[in-house]
Image (cartoon, rainbow, N blue to C red; front, top):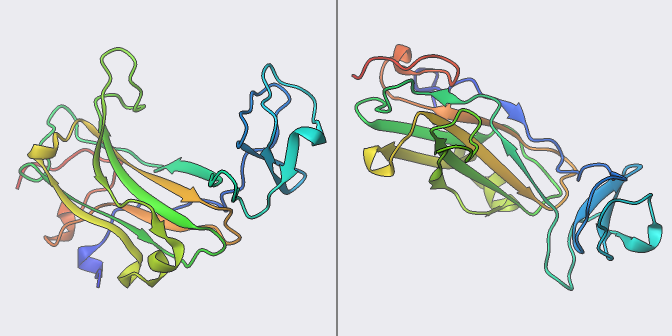
Length: 210
């Protein structure tokens, strides 16, 4: 049980209902890509390059977000609203960072949810310049029924250390598969069993090593 003195940092956010982006007349689409149009989900059946006005013959309605022929599934990835900045000192709590990602509700309609923790030396997690992005922890795709049944909704609970090469910035990333009729709401962040002053929000500077 996560108690008030063992609390997560404040990075609660809604992941939405995983509805694909609205169709764009200027975008390229590969066969199997998904889009939304007027509230309906469609899967691309004919590759589109250079953009085009909506052509119904190039799409098939696919509200459940699953193509049984190819096995492809509509998916979307959302990154955490906050990013943990360790400053120039990449050691966290004597080189350890206890990270938890948890569901705050019971999403419905989708197939799976996955929580990942990433670290980078670039604030925007790009690989431009000498940018590096590494995965510190990965829950793998968790079937929605399994995720909803987890104790306290915890999707990922892992203590990271220097062997994982924690860089300056740390963030969470969530991938939803399938079309969710009830969107997922998650909380993700750093966690400690020590005094509450040792629990830090993603947006604040790191405390001294303890």
